[in-house]
Length: 275
Image (cartoon, rainbow, N blue to C red; front, side, top):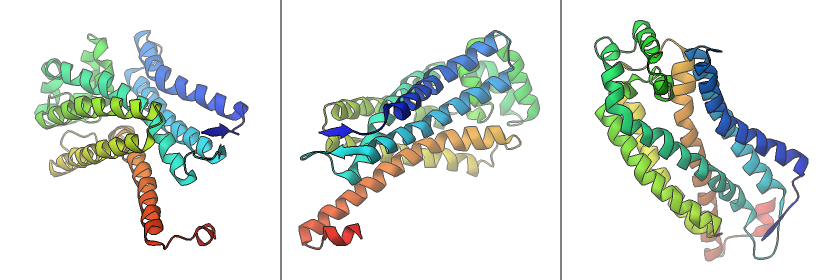
């Protein structure tokens, strides 16, 4: 058990800001677009930045909780706390994206390819193709949720079979395992939750590597390499969020295992570790 010493006047505004960015930022961008108060391009910028800002707020909240909590006898070890907090906060974030956006795209992918696929298949991700996609989106405004990312990586608009297979696997398998890991974390079975989190990390990190590599080998045919907002913040930025979260937990769990090995072999010296 742990007692909190994080000032509420610091943690509560951060938590509210996180909820606003994550839950309402994306919807706000869509509503502004529907009302004609901003363009499709600008609304996509709002949506992307709201997700990325909420992710870094998630890390900041996790760090503050682990840094300023006071461990009580029988509680979590201090070096493990940050990874536990990241798992605790990241899983709901991940589950929502898995089932709402990724699985939603899998359901709609064939319809999206019929609408937008011809724009990108012949000449790749060109300015004309993106302009045509945005123009057609005015007649099918519900597709905004997928087109805002699809103009960065057009594989999501042409029904690419590899991306479909990857997203279907990750959304269903990763989503269900994440729900179980969240259940374990909520019931304070932190070691088991971390194990399943690492299991998900291995699968999804490999999938992300293939996701990037296949487009590199394809000569960035479906990637918008002209607009930094599309290739940097959307294509690389959004996908690297998963890698960062998994790396943090893997690094902390590796440190934990090394400490346990040192203690088992009698080479662990607490005084020396603190120097």
